[in-house]
Length: 357
Image (cartoon, rainbow, N blue to C red; front, side, top):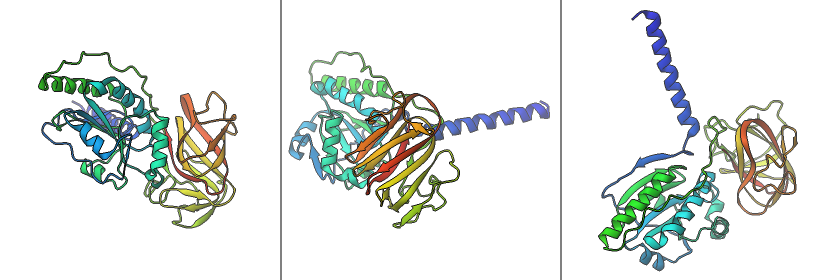
């Protein structure tokens, strides 16, 4: 084999590895990641450090868990990846709860406002969650499961053994097949009628943009080492910073304008008016925020159109922030690079993160 051919093969291999590496980076945990389909005799850990029980009580939940196939869903209500899984999970609850499946939502918060039970109650009502939700504010159950991700689903059989472990979105068909399999095993063991192999839940999955903008964090601690704030003033922990209008906008970076206080997990507008500029590549944009404010959205210098508007847009190109959580700003069918401007009216408005799809 001559040197030219060898060189071509080596270069081809390097390029292939690089492409795979980039795909892994950009796909991240939004997509299906099957960790272990049969964990054997590893027992599901106990629910520990629970601060609040929603849709149930401690005593009632303990009774319900006996001899059930249990799907543990570790989530938090402002996480877009978690939110996208909920239609499937609520459908499984409706379909299989009377056949021996118990779903337990383990709400492990990322941000402080997600520790408020009233906020979580509003969220579970919004998303039609009727199964038990336990609030893991101290993250003790999260640690007991040795978890590091939102969302994450574990399924235990009727004996309490963990049999399935799935990180992120996707994998809905294999997850439902595992549910059916474990319910069949339970039926045989308990000498009750087997469930029929029903058709799988038919819900359209969200299709991600491959090379999209990554999640952008406003808090100086959360954004550490991510190089996402484009402003020359940078992060200045626990200080009020006057951020000036940028001369240039870089892709995948955000630019607050006005007076903003830098918090560990967010930025807070300390005057009545402010702005955020952002250059991104995605077909969906969400913002996690709290405190009342009115947001006016412009895309590439013009007001957001109805065709581009996300589900939380009202009054043309506006969003009324009234409760702490995630707001869908943009939802379109195609992904291209855009520059977005958000005009903010509301002193005390806090921005935590942008997420993209």
